[in-house]
Length: 187
Image 1 (cartoon, rainbow, N blue to C red):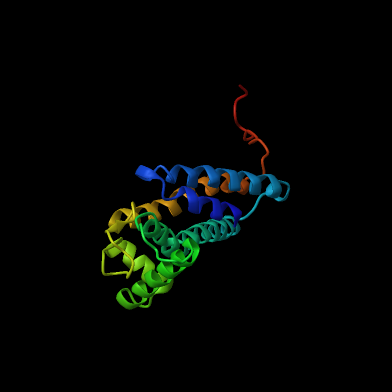
Image 2: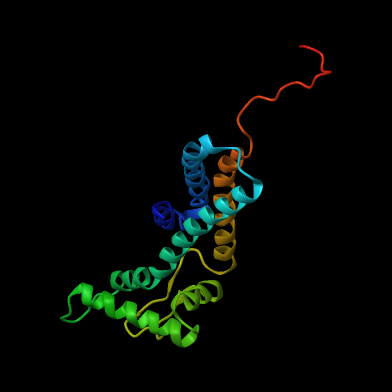
């Protein structure tokens, strides 16, 4: 779960560079699991597939859920940076109001709102225009949006799975060297 939290910060890096971290953290997670589980090997293929899938799924889901849940707040921060006059409200109050307006916008225009609505918004549009949100004066966009975002999300789970699996699937063998068969010629 902590790795998923960290990945949520790396995932949206420019030019899909964040995908590198999914492989790297997958290798680290897989290596740690290998180290702990190695004394009990060999494990069945089913156990390794189920265990690896669960680890990858939880880590990826935490990363994705954190990224999606923070979008209204991140977009509100963009609005705050682009607004010169927020009245006599403190900045934090203004930011929270805008984030609530953005969440409301997602719920109204991308039902059912919440995480599903936010994902729909990212894939379909990924931008907010003046009039979408009361205090928005200029169009703001997510850097990664549309089909590119969906491709990045799909690649991220594949790369995380590769990183973890490349380490954990080695637990299938017992770690002993292969003995030559009885009729084999000596080297």
